[in-house]
Image 1: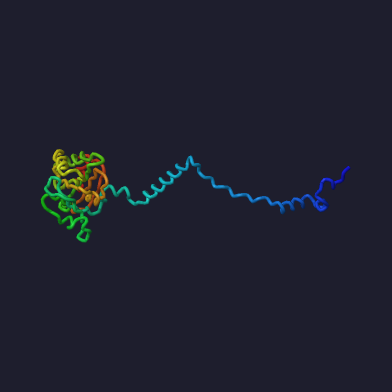
Image 2: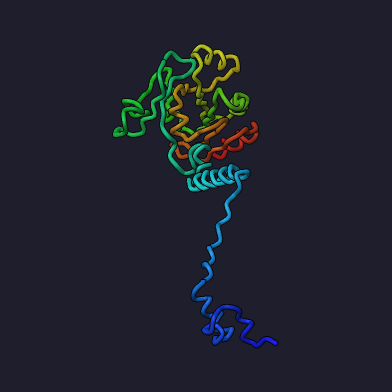
Length: 242
């Protein structure tokens, strides 16, 4: 019968004299286990990588838009309680040609006009300062976008019998002057129609769409601005409150 020493095979006398725990400890020193690698961060598969990029881009755009204060108000016309922006522009049916003058004060840049807008007077000129000597209803219309001409038709009908209130139109158009005149005549607009050929008046008023109707007290303080279509009854009611 073999003795206990036969279980150690040919490891030698030194190995036979060590306990099992000592042999395991020695093996740990001579054959250390490799350190575990940190887990890899999962990456989106190529199948969805484009979608992640689009979502990230949209998030940036939304954040940029939300960071702009009063971005919606900037397209709705002047705010209540502010001074009515000044302009002088050719009357569509008049003899004058050229771009509108929107120079607000003498010290402003000459790019808006050589003279302050209020000082440009005469036949064929639509001058906001003259219009604002009485309560004023000012309607903005464009050629492009929504069909805004029906709103001017309503204003034309609503102003009948409204004494003591001035009504006028700012018409942004790059059409030929004769074509614009034909539109005004065909629709029977009798109120002054200022031609805003380069969009300077619409820009200084903060109007980015049509129709927009601006209501101002006598003297030129803005009572309010409305975007969209108003009925004749609404127009008369607003005009009476001026």
